[in-house]
Image (cartoon, rainbow, N blue to C red; front, side):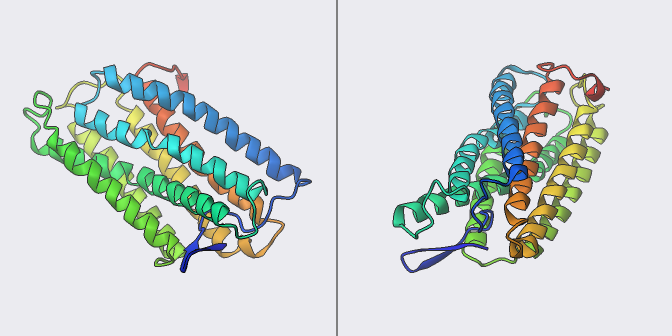
Length: 279
């Protein structure tokens, strides 16, 4: 795992490849192009989805606000990835210059923070749905914005705290990945259960099964991404020929996961028509 020093503080770049990309490694560059194409598609759909959420009456306003608060972090996430890629391919200097260290460290922090925030999306939805279940008789009529005002800052603060702890070396990557996988699978199961239990009592959703598709698809992607991250940072990082490819695969997996969140919601809101996703 690469490290940087800013002043007397040692920073662990946990999602940055320690090896410079080989200009002749065709596989690496193909994977990087695929990641960038998925990122461009995600940018288009995330922008459309944020706007679509603002005018929909299909979902409760608290769920809409939570989703929008998570979606907007994709923009700084993309910028951070561009800076990290510049470092990995040698555009940003590896000579230990202060500017290069600060840019790369900040980009890494943003990337880890936004990834953690995305992982906390379903736990935050579960909190919102628990309130919906407890106030099932009038939840659709009363907005109760205080729920979002409490949940969103808590999720943001938690993700920033965990990202900072990871980069300062206070956590074990393997243990964190295992906990993330477990948390996300439990959250997905709980999310499906809550929606299935309350869907008959809450507003009729035309594409109710979309939520099940979403949780399953995203769970698979996050588990794959976390597993790749663990494998990359513990095993493949020791092999210079595999390290760059492993890192770009991990990033592609997380980008795909974010894109699928947006795509499945777009289908639910009739912004995109994909036949096999429709119930």
